[in-house]
Image (cartoon, rainbow, N blue to C red; front, side, top):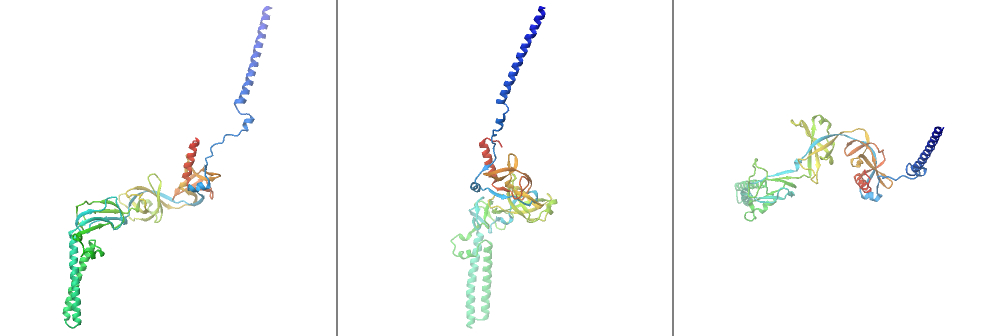
Length: 412
């Protein structure tokens, strides 16, 4: 009987303990729920709070500021995109703008007026040559000119005497023959002086020249340009008419150069005179635009290539003979496509993008590009025809956008 009562008491005690534990668990659950509402998922009031506004990727510029920065906006248009061939090319001298200066008389270099790298104008003096040969030519001409003058006076006197019936016709004919001979000798001597570089205007000063001046021969520049080579030194003896001798000076006018493009045999028929050409440097950037002037009708036996020549204006001297570049030649056209200038497409956040005007400034817009040719890029998606976009100054906007992003701590 006592054991039965003890068992019942134990069961009752366990029941109370279990009930107390259940109450504690329920209380803990309620408390956890309350904390979750306070610190976990937001309730209805939290859902109605606005989220933090992110970076808008807009370059904010007024119309005046955009104009001052060179930002130009155009409406997108369609146009033909030509197919191109990318071929190697080499910059060469323009054969019509290179002068190799050699002496016209033999003598000794007495003075040098130009060095390699000097820029000279047409007619500038390059060197002074002391020449016995020139002095002899001038003396011969002076003698011949004196004989001509005297014989002319003698002829005039005989003709007057013949008119006065004082002399015979034979004497007149003899005087005329002497004059013609003297005149021929004078003309021959004068032509030799001209061949030696003495101008017609300089003939008058020969008779009155100071001692030694008639032996001075001045070597002058036949064209304007840069002295790119000088092979002569002071005191050196030089000879005229020596085919094996080096030219004394080489002058180059590089304001215009040739770009010779190597055309592979299978592509010759695709190249036409007047085809547009974009010349690019090793970095892929366009240097200048030109057209094919002509295609040489000869195929090189070793390289099996023909040459298409482009005549390029080079006022700043950026293109140098011997420089290798790449030429993209337009060889045809296809149907019209939506296209924009190459500079209008910029890489923003590793995506090809263009800038479009938005309220308060300009924003980048990703686009899908296609072929590029003639300074244009095809836009396949991301821009519609007649939609405004930044056609000039996109790089400036990109730089400003990256600057703003860096200042805001925003990673692009």
